[in-house]
Image (cartoon, rainbow, N blue to C red):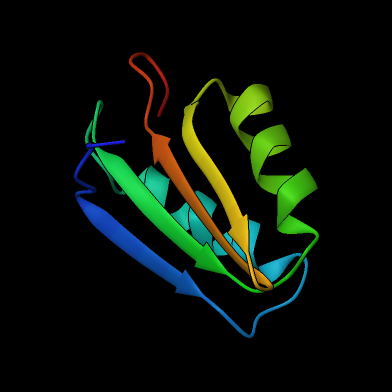
Length: 81
């Protein structure tokens, strides 16, 4: 995927619910259409971040897992603040 993130959230070493709480704070301060890259080590993010996106209407552009590291690209959807 060739989407360049506008923001990066490094949540490595943090455990549920911290990564999603921090993601919520970052997205709140973003402009519509901007993309945040989330880096995490907590396996619960594989459940929590997609749910967060579905529930709040943001677009999950990428979900990648390798060697206990998780990377997500999330676009703040139009009409969501």
